[in-house]
Amino acid sequence: MKAPRVTLEQWRVLQSVIDKGGFAQAAEALHKSQSSVSYTVAKLQEQLGYPLLTIEGRKAKLTERGEVLLRRSRHLIKEAVELEELAHTLGQGWEPELELVVDQIFPTPALLSALKAFESQSQGTAVQLREMVLSGSTEALTLGNPDLVLSSIVPKGYLADPIVEVEMMAVASPDHVLFQEKSPINNERLSHELQLVVRDSPVESPVDAGWLGVERRWTVSSVQSALEVVVSGMGFAWLPKAGIENELSTGKLKKLDLVSGGEQSFHLYAIFGKGERTGPAARLLVELLQAECNMCPKQTSLNHF
Image 1: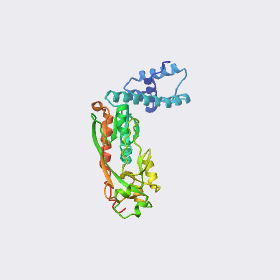
Image 2: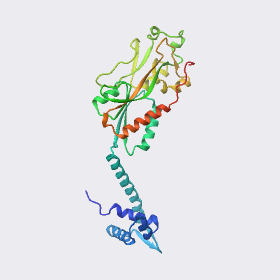
Image 3: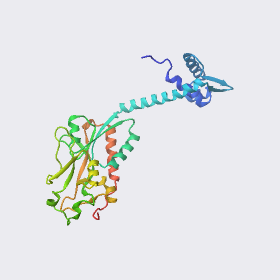
């Protein structure tokens, strides 16, 4: 690869001459002698083979070529500074990339808010996000090397911090035949209706986590798919309460009045895939997730639906 003849320092000196309005002002700003600044610019022009500056009175002005090159050089200097900052943060242990595996029932608003806050503080750390269902998130730990896994299942031998309690609710479309029944609905009556279940995502050992008492069951690939089918009136499902607030408030979904189990809750954890080797970026993201989940408003009572 051809090595550049012009250095970043030469471009920086040229920028200062233009930005400060002259050689003397640039020399003062750069803590250099005026003769050193003049020599640097002269050498730059000599290496390029044409002038970049013209002198009008006591002020240096760019030629047309000079304007083009100075504009491009500003990007070079900016990228060089960012590269040095990245090298410094990597030297301090900041991860260049985070692999984040998230169970689909994790509250989306809290996740997005935390990621938005993380981006402004991440010092260049990129995020690779994968969504899984049930034990699929923990299988990612055994088959790969994710930095963080947000799941309700904490495998043996892994460090984890609690993040949020997720509430699930049994719901159906208001037009569903179950709402013609006398409440509360018992398990025997419920078992004759179609239930929507989200398919477990692991490849090797999928877990059947649906209610096994039902006679008719459809399996879909995501929580969003289950939501859309239930809204259409084709069945019932237990869905994350935080993810269906809009459908409940607009009357597209209605809570089923069951004898028992109409609402269920469980904790989601941040599992540290690299254990004690977890870096500062991953730990920052966990703190932001906890903060966002703590700020989430309490769910209003849905007994009137």
